Image 1: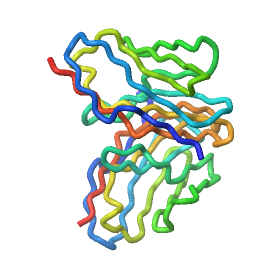
Image 2 (image 1 turned 180 degrees about the horizontal axis):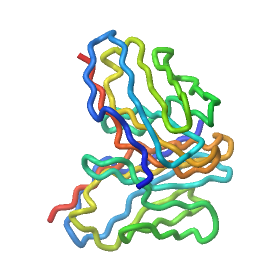
Image 3 (image 1 turned 120 degrees about the vertical axis):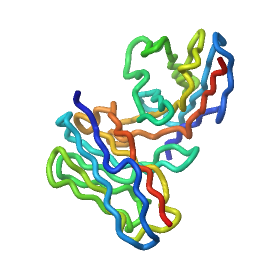
Image 4 (image 1 turned 135 degrees about the horizontal axis):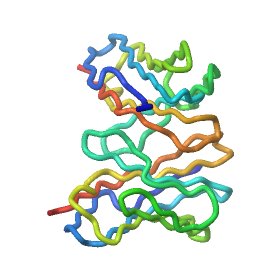
Length: 113
Length: 114
């Protein structure tokens, strides 16, 4: 089945230790999104790629970076995680920019110790 | 800035009760509206969507939602809930001036007692 896959499902990192979360998709979608979701809150968009074009949200901290080496994969890098970065990180895809329906992966729960 | 507001943070119902979850948004232009559901331990899944046409849309598992433009609302309904409907429900809005991005409400946790 076509899907959005996130690895790992659970990630524990130490304060200040860089961490990378990965997302892959078999939907061949042009657009990939990264969201941060904290407990009992709405998913918050961090950035998205339309093909190779990177679009950062204005309020996304510089601590968060992303890479998209090809259509299928997208990575979220947190350069120096703080305790406040502990959250669920969701990856989503859509077929094209402006095609509003997004398909979500299961998320990676990040714990910062 | 656009915003999406869900009226209830946590709703508790008994099986067979009727459900209505409220969603209001702040944007006045053309919008696309969604309800997503997140079952315990699972990923966000699309429940239903409205792009245009009939303002009453039907989704999976017996859910429906009504778009009322004058009220900026897109409320989710189900006539008779089941225990398996226990989940978190998110309303989301997309508009052309947001370039395809979705704005999510804060979610409503639904607990259905058997």
